[in-house]
Structures are given as structure tokens and as C-alpha cells.
Length: 357
Ligand code: KG4
Ligand code: ZN
Image 1: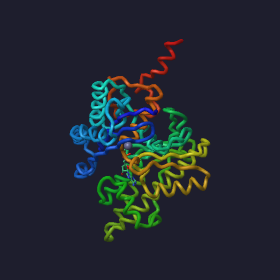
Image 2: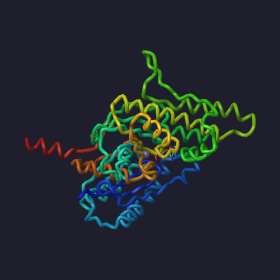
Image 3: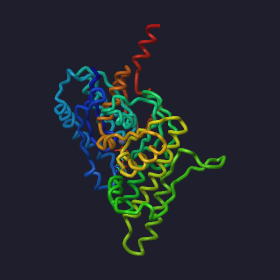
Image 4: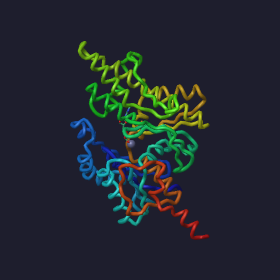
């Protein structure tokens, strides 16, 4: 019988609680704060923390209700502990630690990005490393070689803005509101992706040529700003064409690098994670490019692309079954590299082995 874990995710602006049994999700509750933050055009950290405090109790109750299980059937409690907004992370982390203490369960801190990788494991019993993960969210854009459980090598990343951040900033420039990704995706459907040639953002190397995998999206955002400044005096902005051209440029940059990373490292599967994995053009173009190169692409279901606790619970089951536990003194961290994930755990497996020598 696979382990059952209740997990809480509060790293940004969704209060989420889920219960996973192995790779099966028994309940997934997501309470979004988007409406609150829309007033400010982006996430206000202080407001996010307060909203998490008022929503987390109800979300826990709803998850237990939806899964129709009691505490006796839950093996461990987990929460996202890094990276993210510290005040927001602390709410979920404190709630999870409290539940672990009160119900006498082991506690695990989970890395948010490992959660995004594990979103693709949900309902896929056969998915196993090695594979390439293209992780594209509001805070991160990374090309990750997944060699084994918690064994990650970052092959490439953005040097400035994350892909989702670029979508959010360009949407603001076009007056489309927040969050930008879904609205640009929608508006771009009626635009011409070839209307305006835009720079893809290559990283020059000191020895000449370009970095094969690293990306840059801040120059692209500036190019869109210049384009808007040029077109605005002429009358109505061709918003759909600009959105489509911008989106096509981001997608081209991501697809090219993902295929190169996979081929150069002999990885035949590409797993996509993070909010931008919901993008329709990325889904279409990566599928086409992968098929042309004999590669397989896995996208998580749409509801597990953006932040949720099901992916955190799925990652927590894997960590729990590998014998890892976190101390109750674990603190929230705004930044933590995926490659430093072992510092979240007192690896009971390793300790048991050392003690038996
Ligand atoms: O993974 P996520 O929910 O939160 C972070 O961990 O950052 O990602 C949120 C990001 C936002 O920047 C949002 O604009 C973007 O994902 N996003 C999209 C789409 N849906 C969400 N970007 C492009 N196309 C979409 N359909
Ligand atoms: Zn995320």
C-alpha cells in the first residue's frame, strides 16, 4: 500500500492543501488570491501572508473531507518550505508542523520546484528518471537533468526574467492585467505570431558564440516596450499581434533549448512543469519538435501546472518512502537551489546504515 501524505502549499498566492496516496491524488484544494492581488497588478507579499492565514484552516478541513479519510490513515504531513515569499511559506510550514506535532506524524519540508517536477508523476506509475525537466514558472526557468530521486543537474537557466515573469510584465505593458500568462495565451489566439520579429535573447560567451541552453527574457520585454512606444502614436495598438509575436518568441527560445538539452544529454523524455506549462503554444510547438526528433513530451494536467498542493504531496510521498524526514526546526527560505535539497532532510536511511556499520 503506497504512503498517504497531506501537504500544504503557500509559497506565493495560492493557499493549497492536498492528500496523495502514492501518485494518486485523493483531494486537491486550491484557494486562489488572484482577485485580491489583481487590484495591485501583482502579488503583495504582506497581503498574501494574511490571506493564507485566513484560508489555510478551511482548506485543510476541505481536503480531509474530500479525501474522506481521518488522521489515522495519514502517514506524514508536508509543506513547501522553499523557495518563495518567506512570510507566505511560514504560514503553510507552521500549519504543517503543528498538525504533525498534534497528530504524532513525521514532517517533511518540500522544495517548491521539486513539486513542479512531481506534477508530471501524478497518475503516471511508470514515469521514472532519467529525463529532462523544462521548468517554466513565474519565478524560474530552468532546464533540469533529472538523474534520479532528488538528483538534479541544472543544465541551463534564464539569466534574468523567468518566462512567466516575462508574460506578466508584457501583459502589463499591453494593459491586459494580472496574471499575464493566461490572458496573453488567450489574446494571442487571434493574433499573427509572425507580425513582429522580436529578439530571442541569446547569452554571448566570452570565448565567442552563444550559450547553448541559458536564456534571457528581459531584452525581449524591452523590445516589446519599444514596439509599443513606436506603434502607439499611430492609433489603436495591434494587441493580439504583439501578444502572439511575443508568445511565439518565448516558445521558440524554450523549445530550441529543451530539444538541444535532451539530445546533447541522451534524454529521450522531456517533462514540463510550472505555470507556463499551461501555455497552449508551448504545448503544441514542443510536441511537434519532440516528435520530429524522436522524443517524448509529458505535460502535467492543466490543473497541476500552476501552483497546487497535489504536486507537493506527490513529491512528499517520494521523499517519505525514501526514508527522509525534516526536523521541526526547519525554517522557510526565500531562495534555495534545487541542488541543495538534501539540507531539508535528516536522511534516516543514511543514518540507519551508518549506525549498523
Ligand atoms: O508555477 P506558477 O503557478 O507559480 C510560480 O511558482 O511562479 O506559475 C505562475 C506563472 C505566472 O507568471 C503566469 O503568468 C504563468 O505562470 N502562466 C502562464 C499561463 N498560465 C500561467 N504563462 C503562459 N501561458 C499560460 N497559459
Ligand atoms: Zn510554482
